[in-house]
Image (cartoon, rainbow, N blue to C red; front, side, top):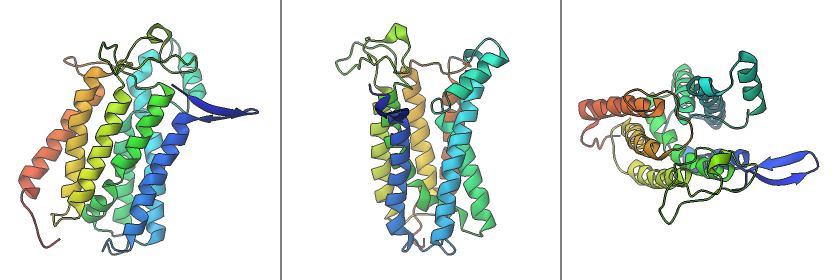
Length: 265
């Protein structure tokens, strides 16, 4: 599509970076006016913005680390080649689950240090995650990363920009727009969580619903991805194995602790 939106001298505006930034801005825009009425003791504006910064940084670091781990065999033949690839492709190459695990872990640690109610705060924050993720996946589409397998379906997308991240052998071939599939699902998930959060619910229920629905969706979409997915076990990619694991945990927590409605919030 359009990996680079425009150039001004030596400066270029990458569509992936722009959409990622817009995703975080949209998440903050959604949460900020709801902060005052969240009813969460200790969640001051300063603490709130600190959490958002921690999530942003954790998502970048964790996403890059897991990308390096699962893509290690593809980064080059020698350590020097791998290091060169990583340095020259810092703005691309992230695995969402890596970012989610690191950012959530760091945010929970910070919330614990600030004596915030972990489940209630997580429920409040998690609603905005699929909104930001949906915009980020549009950036993936524009850059050509996270592309799908060849398809004969009428909505298959052909990538022709020489700067796209789609490999040369797939240029001009209709591919599943897996980035847009995931973007559409995340928008739908955002709406679902938004309305669910307005109803009486047990603390932690919104967080578990997000984990369950996203893991299920990601497991399915992985079958349509055409980019390198890392080593496989039983024909499943690392992201699918993680999806199964977190979905299982979410289902257990739901059945054990969260089934039904608590009107006492």
